[in-house]
Every structure is written in structure tokens, then in C-alpha cells.
Image (cartoon, rainbow, N blue to C red; front, side, top):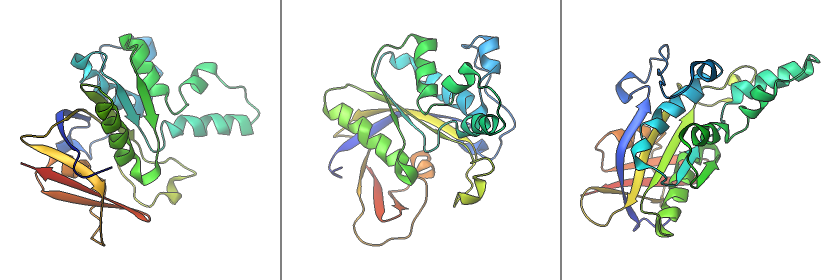
Length: 223
């Protein structure tokens, strides 16, 4: 993605909020969801829907859903049941697939527009932004983006290099050539890795470097 492609971000919303990122005990109320359906939702699903509902005013704008692991805790529970010879719940299975949260949001809001689910390892956020920017270049006026992940449960927790808290956030992207704006592109040369871009998006730093294996990304803020 060329670094000359500038974009703006509207209404950055998250659960937990940026200042409460280490608080994982309270879940969003989600009054838009029927109580019986809400009880079946995982904490990750509830946090993601909170972010998505916060962007609802943008109507049928395309939606990009990004998650490295999705609702993997539910998948592990199903695999455990299979190994124990138990039957699987169709509802549990339908909520375990990677795009389930995005599809559930579409059902709850009657959203009939385009949505895409992205999983790209440690570059998931960057891949989602590239997908959204491609939609904007292709003619979309705005694109909603939801990114979410939770800590890996056992028995996979030990394989996660960094143990990040549960976090779901959303924003609206628009192309912009003037005023405060951001750009994203491949980083040139070696720099110190500054980790997940979430802190950069919530701050005012001029740039941010994210090293993902052999790939590196450079986020920049422009006035």
C-alpha cells in the first residue's frame, strides 16, 4: 500500500475504553440484543458488537471485520466436546466460525451491504486497513472497520508471544488529502518495533513502526 494514500479516521470507539484497557470484568450492556441471545454471546462477541453498534449511524457503509483468532475459545470448547465423544450444538458451531460476529451484527441490524472478514496473523490490523482503503479507492464513501481479539485460552495460551487483553474497537475510514490524516505503508530499513498500532491510533505520535516477522509497517500522522 503506497504511503501517499492518505485517510482520516472518524469516531474511534472501543470496549474496554482506551483508558480502561486492563479492566476485563465488566461487559457492555448491549440493549440492542434480545436477552436470550445476549446470554449465548462470548465476551469477545459482546465487545465487538459494542464497537459495531457505536458506528451504526453510518448505515450501510461496507464493514471490514478483523480478528487474528476470532472466537477461538468457543472453537476449542467444541473440539474438546468432540474428543470426549459428545454431540455439538448447532448454535455453538455457527457462532464459532471466523466471520460469525460480523454476520451476527448484520442479522441484528438488517445490514445488507458488503462485509469482509480478515485474519492475517500479527498483521491483521494492517491487512484490514489495506482492505478498507481498497474499498475507498474503489468508490466507497466510507468504510466501517471492527478489530477484535482476546487472549488465547488453554491449551494454546503458551504459544502466544504477547498476552494482550481482550480488546474490540471500531472506526470509520475516509480518504482525505487535506487536514489531519494518516497514511500506512511498508516500512523501509530497520527500526525499533513499537507493537500493536492501537496506542498510536489513540495518541498523537507522528509515526509508529510495527514489525511483523519479516514484514514491517509504518503508520504516519500528517497535518
